[in-house]
Amino acid sequence: QWKKKVKKSDQGKWSECNKNLYRTKIAVVRREVGKIWPGNQKIYFKQNQANLLKLEELASRLADTCSIPEIGFGREAIRSHILQWSQEKNRRIADGYDFEVEHTRAKRAKKVRHGKPTKHKY
Image: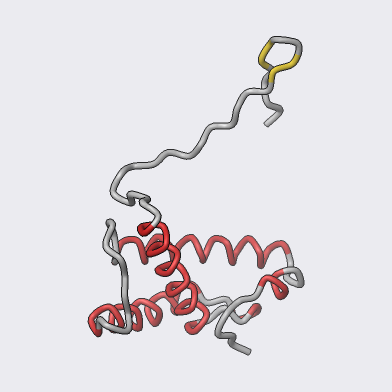
């Protein structure tokens, strides 16, 4: 059964393998969406037919490679995720985030024990 949206409550019932597969597929979806709508432009679908057409084409194309029938992650769920991603991007742009600047992940602070930094165990 294909779903329109994957809910957090459903994710708790999945096997660890399906959870990892889902995370991988979501990363692919995010990367592909970022290629189509890069930069600091806000993304609108209701007022822009070209963006709506791109959305439908992208959802159909990604459904071929990113669908997971066991958990109901299909075309509509992918489409829903793209819309969610675009809303989050629009919100972050409004908050002043710059998508054109290269960002690096935050480094973890070193733990200090008795005045000396300790090494992490990973």
